[in-house]
Image (cartoon, rainbow, N blue to C red; front, side, top):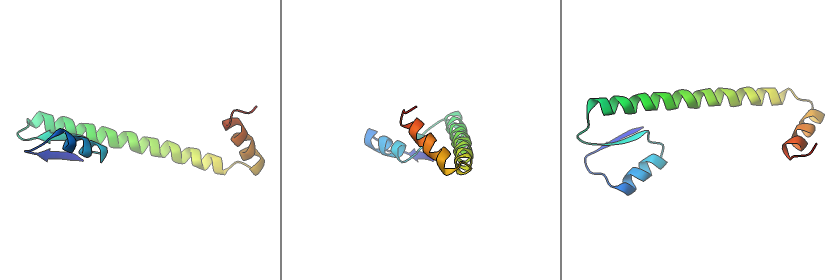
Length: 81
């Protein structure tokens, strides 16, 4: 999300960022500023999709473990040898 406004204050900007805004632009803004925000949003989306694919791959690998292997992994994750 990219927010556009003619009247902004700091709390509004913080709230937009917490809601997931890529940028918060106040009017008037330059075309280049908008393009930078769009490209930042595309890059954020690409990174989030790559992370989701990696997590999905990890979950699929975990599902292939036998119950005993899962228990060993659980113990290792808790710091036990």
